[in-house]
Amino acid sequence: MYVVIYHAKFILWCGGNEYIKAFPRDKWSFGDYLTFASDIFTSAGFEMVLVFFILSGFFIAKSFDKNNWAVKDFYLNRIVRIYPPYLFSLLFSIVILLLIGQINPDLFSGAIPFERNQRLKVAYENLNVESVAFSLIFISTKEYIGMNMVYWSLLIEAVFYIIIPFVVGRPVSYFVFSFVCVILLRYTPWTYFTFFSEFSIYFALGVLIYKYKDNSGVSTIIKKYKWPLLILIIILIFSVVVLGTLKLKYYSGLAVALLSLSTIFFLLKIQLPEGWLLKRLRFLGEISYSLYLSHFPVLLLLYAIITKYTGVYNFYTRIYWTAIPITLLVAYCCYWAVEKRTKQVTSVFLNKRTMRLEVDEIKK
Image (cartoon, rainbow, N blue to C red; front, side, top):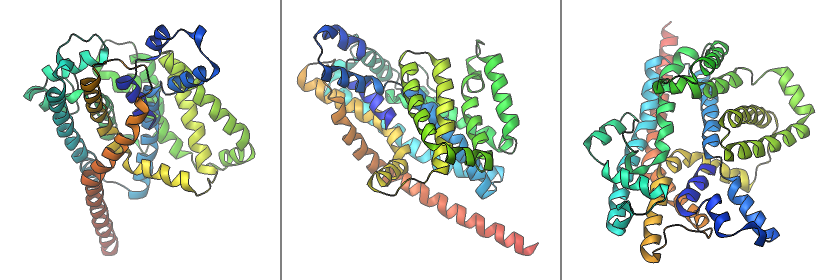
């Protein structure tokens, strides 16, 4: 949800610097400062994707521990689980881009100077067979298909899925290797090493956390100092936001690692009360992949409609909040139509695999 709000601001708000130019701070009230602070609080979208990478490492390690995956079974499960919703989102993004051209073709003219509009123009001009073909393996050419900017993280995730069967049983070695890669490869000119030079360390941390999740010493410390730990988590959340907003990626990445480490252990050891909020959060978790894939085209479509009927291309009011429920509704429809079906397929696959393993065990 944080990433959705972050992208909604990019499409449907002028941005913090532009807002301050239009409305100088010497005229702000206390309420204006609070509102602006809420705007800036959702400006660390990149850092929240890093949090997801750590969670991905944790839960994939859990999946291997629970299912005892053979390599081919794991790959097949991931392909069935991840690829159909992605293909659907590619088609969805293309249709939305073409629809935008029908609604407000001025967005592709290049005359509007804002980044979102320039990237839309490039995406429209780059919509061809070659770009679609590269997108099938999560690679962009000049711009992501349909300007669906969330696709950048999918290649990173795919590389992790490729290597994880070979490192999940060696979490400490994987973490050390990833750490060394950060030191040695971070400033190399070879962009195809990006996974190892920048992102592998986050997945490795998630795998490592899973290895030590049941450590009795850690459990004792967390239960004894849960309130100081909760305060630390809150401080780290604000640290991630501030450092991310200032574009201090090295330090914001470190803060992300500390935040994820402390929060995961806290949530594993401290039982949260069941209630309305937790159920809604679980619902968001259920549809999160569809939400991630579909929200950006929806925001672009809303931008095209609003600009068509207002003639305004940079918004200083907070209309981006009105887009959030619309993205959720569309995401749920996408989830119901595609992702839920793929989950059913993977469930059948897992059941058949379990039965096969039980039969093999009986034969032995």
